[in-house]
Length: 383
Figure 1 (cartoon, helix red, strand yellow):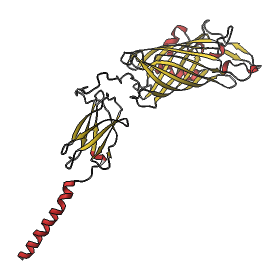
Figure 2 (cartoon, rainbow, N blue to C red; figure 1 turned 90 degrees about the horizontal axis):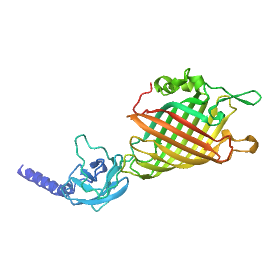
Figure 3 (cartoon, rainbow, N blue to C red; figure 1 turned 60 degrees about the horizontal axis):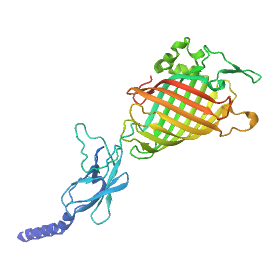
């Protein structure tokens, strides 16, 4: 019996001795055991391992948005390493750690930079002396805006606002208005989607616009109340759509490639753009194209966010003379919009739009004025 006990003890001893190297070596590190934490506004990120490193020092590379920005060493037996990123982190940046012990590196998943918990003070220690501000854009990834107001077309061709009646013989007769001023109630939706991360210095947007126009003679009974009625989106937004005699729609890609006054209350982005659109008039034989390419500036933050000036060169098929062949790209288009915030989600706007050939006595050249109210639907319920 004693011999059997001795045999068992020897066997157990051999098992323990044989297993010790494996235990000391530890299981390989897995990507899910690596976590990277960073807060917006800080210049450091923290790398944390779920299990302590018992064998040797680990080399860690910190990536921000896929680019390696720092490397450091995690000492043996430690689980946490604070790393200086060398730049100021912005919300939405992606953080990643690459961990190596001399063998194949282990790459963590991407962790987004988030706002610090309430009450937590974000330290800028370790930031470069001249850190570039990255908070010069308050726009959301998706912007959806409803607007309503008046279009004043006194200095624009009558056909643009559909102030003409088309007879069976093809002739056009001006439709009388309540006053000498030609104006329409307008309503529509603007939308924009940011295709790049907010932290990128170059921004690419896809935006669009729809505009329904209803002659005030068809929309309101008393002219002095037209503006008040047209800007009451809750009650009259759909009324404008139902009584509309003109419709316009545009798709506009926009590349913002430089920003002026980044640290001011009104940063100004310089952009290049193209505009593809159509104009449809009640009673017209078809749909007319309206396109241009151009360059402009837009305010990206603050009380005047959305204010822009744009100039382009293009064509407007509505004004083309069929006897002179296909419409040509021979028109200068200038768009200037001033917006001012009234509440968190409400802006007042005034917009001037010029469409001209720059030729003297050109009856197709015109200037339109738009005034109204717009509401950001990201935080506002239309119905």
